[in-house]
Structure formats: C-alpha cells, structure tokens
Length: 355
Image (tube, rainbow, N blue to C red; front, side):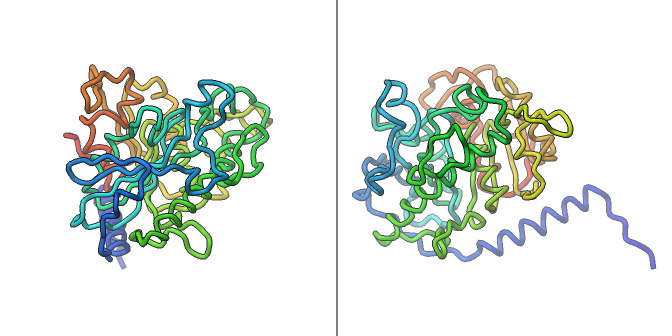
C-alpha cells in the first residue's frame, strides 16, 4: 500500500481548514443579544455602533481596590482604574467573549480624566462578534521592572509567580501585592455576577460551578497584559490568545541546568498551549522588538503565520496625536485595525500581505 505524501503547505492548509471548521462549529450557536441599559454604568460613551461602559470595581465588591494606594501621586494615578466593556448595537450577531488586559500603568477607564484608554481597540471591535471586556487588574508595576522581577533575580520563576498571583491572588510571589479580592479571577467573577444579576446574559457560560470558563474565552492583551493572557492560556486554557506588543519576561539567576534567557514559566513543559491558538503583532521599531521575537521563538511561533510585524515612519492615534513609539501603536494606531482584528478575533493565520 502506497503512503500518501502531502505537500507541506497543503498539509498546513488542511490543518488550518479543519481547525477553523471545528472552531466555527463550536461557536455556531448565536444567542439573542440584547444591548443592556446604559444606566448600569458608572460612565458610558456612545459611538456609532454601540457604547463603552465603565464599571467601578469597588462598587461591585467593596474589598476590591480601584487604585494601588494613596501613598504617592503616582500610586494614585497609575494602574487599576475601572473595568471597560464594549457593547455593540442590537442586531450584531454575538458569538463569544473576549477578555482584554491592558499594559503596565494604564487604566481601561480612567476616572481622573473620564477616558477609555484603549478606546480605539474597543470601538473598532464592534463587528467582531464578541462582547469585549477590558478588566482592570493589578498592573501598577511592570513585571520586568525593578519593583518586581527586574529588581530581584534570585527568586526562582519570579515572573511566573507574580503573574500567577495577579491572576489568583494570595501569596504565590514574595514581592507581589495582590490580595484575593484584587485578583483577576475574583474581579472577573464579580463583574460577571453583576451583569447576570441585571439579566445581562453572555454568549457563553463564563462561570461554571464557581470556576471561570477560561477555555471558552478568547483572551488578549497589550504589553504586560499580553503576558497575562498567555499565562492564563497556558495554565488555565483559552480558545485563542492574541498578544499586542508582547511578551518577554525577565529570567532569574537561580541555578539551572543551562543558561536561561527568558522566564522559567516559558520553559515549563508541564503545561502547554498549542501554537495554533496564538497570534502576535508588534512594530519593528518597538524598543522591545528583539526580546519579543526571541520569545516567539521559544513558543515556536512562525513569522507571518503566528506573528507579524509592521512599520510606519510615524504613528498616530484616532485623534491624530502622534504616538511616541511603536509599542503603543500596536494597540492605538487605527492604521493597523485589520491586523489587530485578524489576530485577536479570528483564528486565521497572518500570511496576508496587504494589511
């Protein structure tokens, strides 16, 4: 009996078709989406195809912080903030939930100046077929900063422990400060309960038997948030993970069998996420470009399939203000809308040239 030998590109294409067919079948049930009332929001902003809704975490649970602390002005102004949700107009066929994590220091909604800091991304996703939730979480410090893992290379798997504590709360890390009430899981649980108690149904069972249904969700993030999405996808599951201008976590100096150039959790084989579920985009002039590309190599991601880079002489946000570096352009520059939407809300590969 002769063996059938497939052209490698044909084999990849067939896997792509099978994978996406299975995905389409798994989310094929479209529920009856009803746009919720704006009155439930602490602040809202209308746009042409829906509205953005800000919800104050401490109103959903008094034990949850809205800011890191009040000790210094930077602590009062950096990180956390209010949750933000994009609700499209009635009539859009909703087929999933996408959870987004912002980068270090930012806020989904900033009550100081009443702005949705990732508003470009939230608004442009209206026709993606997803309810988009940007969760406020403990992002006061960058994982690679001197305040966290960059300042103590003698903690084994420092970055992995900090990320886990930010997700679950407790005492996974000796240098993190994330009580359970401020953990990503607790915050998301309270948010979903708030919506459900007001008769607002999501297209999936986000909470089942007290557990978050991570495997049923699309996840993504920018910078530090890209790392949170990847960590959750690897250890808790996800339908899909998109990384915007991320990720590379600093290694530790704890003795290993061979020199490490990246955080231990990247190298941990006890839990994995299939690379077909991962997409990433970044600017070629991002200050961290080389580190990010190195991390994609560790994850076995292939350029123009799983990740794609872009470049422009100048970057501008939707108000035509110049963006200082390509790092911010990955989330804010409207010129790269199609690339973002393809990476975050589909499971198609990124081989198209004319984004």
